[in-house]
Image (cartoon, rainbow, N blue to C red; front, side, top):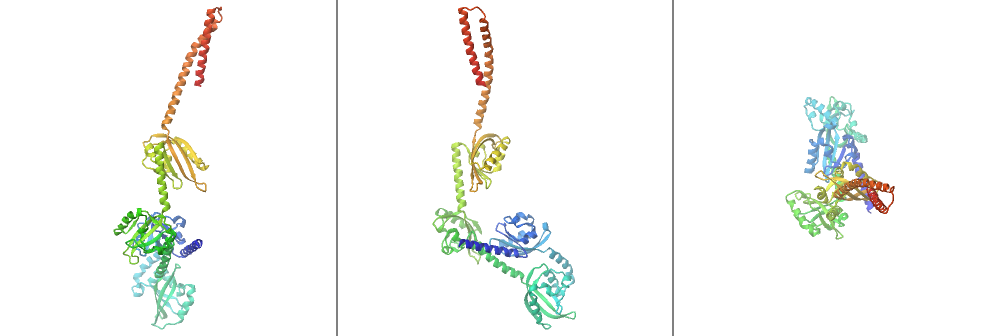
Length: 570
C-alpha cells in the first residue's frame, strides 16, 4: 500500500512538473527562506541560469542586483500581505524588461514572468503617436478595432489593441481577424460570422485570441455593425479575462499544492485555539505520531506533552499575545505507542484571520537530532572526564561536516578557549617542519583504510610557543568502507623530549670525558710497559723478578680497564 502511495505521489509530482514545464511563461517557486525549489526551462532560457545551478540557492544571493528593484519589494509584499502582485521591472544585468505575476503558495512564493523587452520598446514608440489620436477610439483603455465584414481585414486599431496584442499598427493593417485566432477555432469564427448582424445591432461572445508572442488569451468580444469608409464593417471591443482565469487556475494549483504540502508533506500542520485545543490536524499525524487526525481534534496539545516540558512550553505560548510568530523550544510529545518524541514547532497567531481563527502550528519530529546532540554532549563530557584523568587533549573529527570538537584539554594544555574548530585550524597549528609528514601520515591511514595512527609532532599554543605531542587516533568507517569519523588523543610529551635531549647531551659529555681520561691513562701505562720490557733485558734476581711480575700484573689490569672504558664509549 505504501509503495502504491509513493508511486501515486511520484506520478502526481511528475504531472505537476510537466504542467509547469509546459507553461509558455518562465516560472520558479521559492520557499519561506527565499530558497529556489522549482525552476522551469523557460526560466533557464530567460535568466541564463540552469535548474541545477539554482535549486537550493537563495534567490537574493544569486541575484543581488535585484534587491534595490521591485522584485525584492513586491515579492516581500506578496508574502507579508498574502496577496498576489503583478508588476514590470527592468533588469540591467540582462538588459531585459520583465513582467512578473507572483502569488503566495503554501509557505513560499510562486512567480510567473516573461520577457517583455520587445513589447516595451514597441510601447514606448507607440506612446509618441498617442498624441495624434485624441478621440475616444484611440484613448480607450480596452483593445478596439474595426474590420471589414467581407474581407475580415483590419481597417483600424486603437493603441490599446496594439499594446495588448503586440503587433504594430502597420502589422495589424496587413492582417485579418483570422490571424489572431487559433487554427482550431476558425470553424467557430466562420459560424459566428454567418449570422450577419444588422447595422447598429451588437453581439457579445467569448473567444480565444493569439498575441504576437504566441500567448493564448481568453477574451470577451463585443461587436457592433457600422459603416467605415463606405464599407460594411464591425467595431469590436475586447475584454481580456486571461489574468482572471490564471488566478482561478493558480487558486486550483494552490489548493493542490496545499494538499501536497500540508496533507501529504513531511511536517505536521495543525490549528489550535488559544487554550491549546486542536481545531484542525493534517493527515501526516498518522505517519509522524501514529495517531489519526480525527482522534486529535478537541484534545489539548499540552495534555500530551512530557510533564517536564509542559511548564516551559506554556510560558512560551503566552508570548503569542504580543507577537505574531514564535518558535517553541523543543518538547517531548507522546505518540500512539506511549513513547515520547522530540517535536520542534513554529506557531503563528492567526486568531484575527476569519478564515483560520486559531494558531497555526508547523511541527516536525526532531527526535534523532536531539538524541544525537545528547550523545555528542555525553561524549564530550566523557572526553573531559578522561582528559582530567590522563591530562590528554581529546578530539573528535566529523569527516562529513569537517568540524572537529575538542575537550577542555585544548584550553588547559594549549590555551585555546573554544572547543569546536575546522580541520584547517588544526593543520595550520602544526609546526611547518612537521606539517608534510603529519598530513601524509593521516592521508595514508585513510587511503589504506587503516584503523589506527600514532605520530609525534609539534603543535602551536595560543601564546605562539610549540609543544611536542604524541597523537594517537583511530578511524571509524561506514558500511560502505568510507571514513566518517576520527577520534584521537594528544599527549603533551614536551617534558619527556626535554629529558631525552638532556640525557643525550649528558651522555655526549660523558663520552668526551671518558675518551679524554682513557687517553690520559694510556700514556703512563705505555711508559710502565716500556720499563717492564727494559727490565727483562737485565740480569735476573729474585727482587727484580718480583718487581717485574707486579708491574706486569698492574699494567695488564690497567690495560683491561682502559679497553673496557673505550668499549663503553663506542
